Image (cartoon, rainbow, N blue to C red; front, side, top):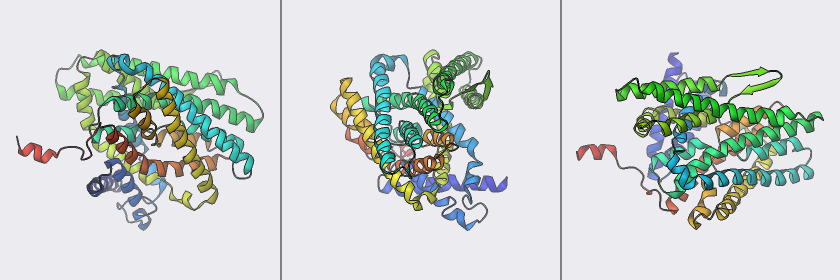
Length: 423
């Protein structure tokens, strides 16, 4: 245990120290955390195998998965706070249209291009793998986006629309992946499973939203028993932990596999809670402050988990580069078309797609699910390669897009030390 604690402390310090360096060249802190993870991961300092100095194997990093799961839960809970009725009345219809349409158009774009690659190089990329990669392309990383928004205190029409679209994107991505996975499995096995293609993904979304609604209602109910701010914040943290734990449950009923989406459950918990609790905004702000170290660890561990072996595999590089180009085109032009359809302002139309490029945990989870089928190893490696590129470049592009529309200041936050000295 002492080695694990030293590793976690070293990861936090490495992430924070590197963020000081990246600030000098005006890069987002999330990029620093990811790079710090790479540096102390199994392919750099971790390779020295000095106890406590980094993570020596991928398995060691995966041993801290409870931290990444909890961090994702809090991130999703925070994003749920954006689904306030007042927000939804203003941009809800546009956000839903854009969120669904851009995800579908991205999947179609990647599918068409990769299926063409399959017919050109059938020995490298199978048809089922091409179909699944198309669905995975729809997923966007909410964590990286939220961290950039938080760091620079971004606010404005694009920021508010972006957070709603990212949340909707994950629900649509889940449906697209489940349907595509069912089709790909049918092609491989020669038979179609209606339960796998339609019933299970719809059940997962419906049950996740239902569980999240119940947890949000219960949180508001129990919050009224306490008056101390610190105790109410503690209760909020406990409920998020409980929600993350419940969303990890899975079981079979009558041949149908029942599971929950952690992101959807926690988002719905945050959404219901923020709309029925009068003091939810204050509590959300206090919870965000408490979870900052957790978020730093999440990104450092994500960086350490990136497998650099994929960079020496020609097939992975070839398909990975095509995948990245196709997905980027799908996100950019899919968002642009969707924004034009919903009559968004030109700056939003031009920049929204760029802010949707980051990709991480959700996509990796989908890739791991697909890893057991024929061609699954290539799918996993291509997604790992894409995540490596997108996570390092995506936050920077998100920041620049938000600067371009005037919703963040380039220099970021005011120094808390200087602010305190003036009081």
